[in-house]
Image (cartoon, rainbow, N blue to C red; front, top):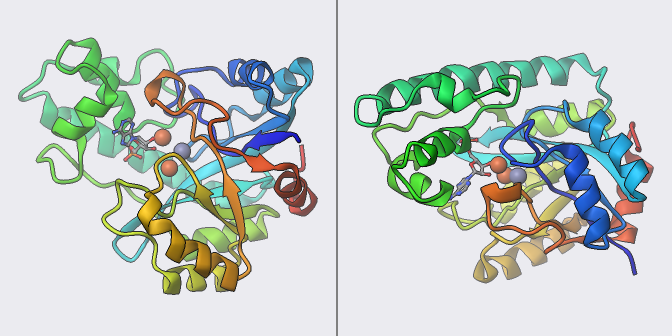
Length: 277
Ligand code: AMP
Ligand code: FE
Ligand code: FE
Ligand code: ZN
């Protein structure tokens, strides 16, 4: 029974491994295939696709889009979107550019108390989607914190005076744009610990009406006690249920393939997607 990891990050966003390394690692851990879902960018697709072919695993091009619904941050996975879809990619460019100004301002605020610079934060790969994890890495490299998690807990969380929000696409709009780009929208980690509450069933219903295809209920950061309600809602709304690791290389404890999806889910997505491989 082959398993598939539907949510991974590379150095094109806040992961620490190259797309090609993820492909090789996927083969090494015995996965049938994986999706690369970097935050707000598709830059890693071609390297991942070539490396997957070489490593003998299947590849699904994906993305994790920064969205918000009312006041709440919601991450939306989009699989197999057509990279020629102008509307979606214009919106993503706006998200990435807002991420740059926001991260610059957070670094400016932090630099009053911590000796870190913008250059240390963006490093050599200034084309990647920048986020708080890169600020965390600079703080860790400068010796202030032991790891990303500690830096988040101490200075990068939303309640911190150094914190600033970033532009996010309205979730309903993003779902609609993923669909019109021929993609398959799946709500990422709807019961993640870091949220104050799970995504409510009425919200799922609203997303479903906009075209949501599935919900990532099997994710290492979903809270077990929040899941029964969401399982029930997903089943009532006939949403597919996916599983994935949200692998970030050394940036998070999540191991590649620790959560995964069935071949049935994998094939269903590939059947629906505009860019199937
Ligand atoms: P941003 O999108 O810039 O606001 O940063 C959010 C990203 O930081 C998410 O994609 C997570 O992968 C990552 N993240 C959030 N909390 C933590 C944590 N405690 N440790 C490591 N990474 C985290
Ligand atoms: Fe991330
Ligand atoms: Fe996420
Ligand atoms: Zn992710």
